[in-house]
Image (cartoon, rainbow, N blue to C red):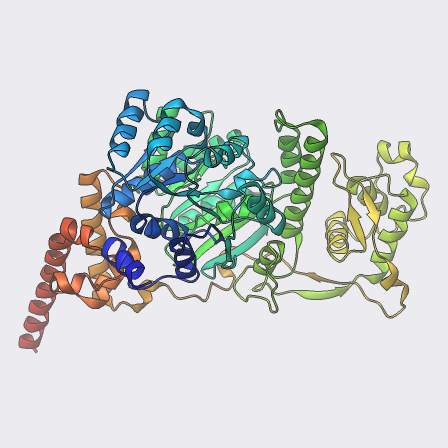
Length: 621
């Protein structure tokens, strides 16, 4: 692996690999296929880019994300690596030119959209080219059991099969349950693969759920408290995006927006404004952000509950990609469930037969129930996410909103038995709304029509309040006493209630009173800038200004020049020459040649000025 580490240092400026990277790269260089499941921000791209530079031929990276391709190609070219992308953002003339250059060996890495794998020009190029590796990014898209199935991904299988010589096949994803993982391995027909799962935990992310109605007020208050931070606010509908954007804009927030109802040109401009820090806040539907590698996003707020844990993990994971502390806040209300059920009903199942479509609908409903469970749980939020992805945890994380709430325990055993009585009386025919209304003794025509007003359990919990009954039922589902079916109109049924047959059994709920978000315990994780002295922080701000100046000159996002971690390392090490600067994490040889002199000059000017001021201060004494 000496050559791999040398490649990493020369082109990317890093002295060592992160967890999991070395083993993946080593197995690829040995000629083995591979599947890597690594969290967002864990450095998946390095795992195929380093071997791509060391293998003899071309590496083709298949990705569904135009923005990611463009971002990655910019970053690679900045690092001195010749790369190109081929997708619908290019004209046919530009595509032919790129393929001609690729055929001549100009590029080591070519990013391509899966739809292009069927075009005659690309097939002809691939058939005659020396292809060492095919990398499948966002590999969960190949599984119809994944949350983001794309039929175009199935074209990858025939594309590889029809190549004159089978290349190494590597696949990468951040979100895959055990079922999806097996699907990827099977469909791609990976040969003797090295399977790496590095874990799903991202310790720098602080998760919290706020069960509130006045969501707009919360967002405005939060942004006003964090005016310098860059953040993404996700909404379930275009209407919510537009309304929240207008409210923030009127408050003077430097904000932009993104959804499918905005024309392509404006959408592209708005996305660039966010990436280039011209507008640090963006309000968007979940169509935004796939493949965006903006490293300094300090918070992601979900204005509405997402449809699945996979979606939430992926979208929230766009915060803190630089490893610095970041907030992932989900604003939850019962209306979110109604909105998501409606959106799932509008989902297009063309291309699937009726049986498969029904299975996918059931899985979508199960994911939605899991997501609702996350919003209602009183347990550790991080552990809930990790357990969903099959990662077992022992202790609460002490770094999420639930771990930092002050709870009191309430014995709800008697109430739980009344819930069981009610569900038994319904004989599993009705859903949550009917059970809630019956237990609360609600005066509704629907309950009279169904006859639940005549149940023994009718009104049994009328003094408890529907919100608390709902939370109790949610906990009972989580503990297995009840279960919800996965139909379009899911119903509540009895699970394993035998433990409650023991007179000593207890159902204990943890309850809390909501406090102001800013008064809650803050994430304990230290920022990287905490390592800087006051003078070091001043230098950091100077280097950030220089980075922004260069980014505007080069028409590149600032983080592609150098990320914040690299600037901080410069402030700590205070390099005096090019040799010193190469010892800074994230400074490779290409970037040294391009930007080294300007950053060294800025550091020297700052340290000289500080030395003069210290000398004058000493003389004054």
